[in-house]
Image 1 (cartoon, rainbow, N blue to C red):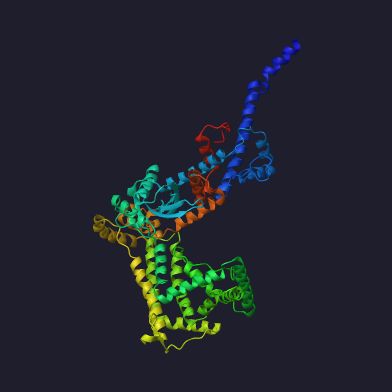
Image 2 (cartoon, helix red, strand yellow; image 1 turned 180 degrees about the vertical axis):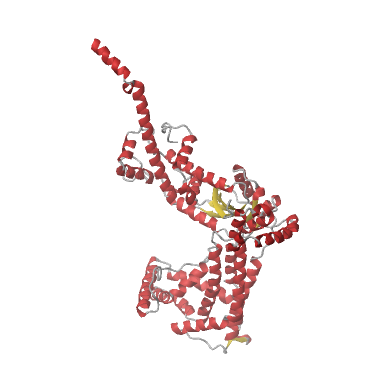
Length: 617
């Protein structure tokens, strides 16, 4: 008995053997295991979110062969890391950190941290807003709003992007939110816009630009959304999306005269006939492949990375930027292949088909002439369209580019006929197409031969097609690309004096000589604190940078939405979609986040059954 008492006494003196010590040790161990499970789940979540991949699976039971991407990633981590496997195997059944709610909470925490960075970056700066609409995979109408900055609406949703100058004077464009609305009237869109602004404590008075497409509920002069915003904030200058305007110019040129209108009708028939079935598509691809090999062997074309890629014909669309140019360019490149396929269609058809007539149309001088003319015109506009879709483009550069394009069209009208006609003539000779005598008389188009009214071929092709098409595009460019003023009367009265003083100041500072464009000038003003000395001048530069040019960023947001909300994920709710969109669209910020900040937000969201080590967060 004495020896037993001594042993108990020794055990009491040894604190490592006490019940309290054992409980504390178990608590510390459980905290470490919880930390491992949480960080592993967060890593898997970040990977799936950044790639726009789905999380859940149809069958997530333990014996399933495909448990969904999230659980399969967890299992992969367990197979590669014994510490992770031990943490998940020893975790309680109610604290595995793999259920659907945990996945959503982790994604929401990631989105929260991204938005925190964006709102801090925006601060109290002014911004522009862009709005557009589209449909998602579940046939819900999507509407995107961009605030040089942006917002989007779906069934309807609003997607926000912010476009503003950061503290360094750089133009910044950020995704902001996805908002669901049930109607797309101008009043409903205004209320939705204001609700988002209120949610993030943003004042409508800070809006300096708004840009939409040509929809009446958006750009209506008397009752559109832009007018309703202007009524409350006269400084929210409206800019019709430049890329949309340019597409409207192209569409108008495509119907500028009856000959060109008929040409595009034939283009649609050619695309449909040569690509109407899988068999014809395969035949077109095979013939094109053989044609490329033949040209390579003869030295007509050269090899190189990205050259001579297989392609197909696509129907031009009035709302798809650059689609007219792409269709005509591919037809020009696949000319021989298309003719071969049309011949096959006519030969294999059980009855009469339009393929034979399309071959006759393609192998006519008029068809080739209009094709080459449209390629020339649309080549100029397509180059401008691509530039207008750049994120770093400001309205000053955009307007300058518009003037350059107008000048190119004027030069083409005055001096471009001879080169165009020579190009058409060479193409016709190479393809065995007869070239008419330009001095021959032909009936006036749209008139009967019985009337006896004739013109020469030269007049028909030069005056009635060449000049008409160029004049139409010039008139449309002048009509659709004109802007007003965005400076108040009071500021306009003082800005001239401030500009004169500013010019004298800048000339005395050699550091400003390195400025190459408007953005570098804005950055230099901030660095030298001249934006505080000359606020009106900086406001003028800021407006030039943040005023919207096109809704291309909104279209990119729609593309991201189609990646995230697929046919197999068409039941995804609005909040979950918004969190995924924030992280996926702003991946640069998302990938720079500290895991500790995300875990801190996740832990503070609500009480958790597991606990992290005190020194971890």
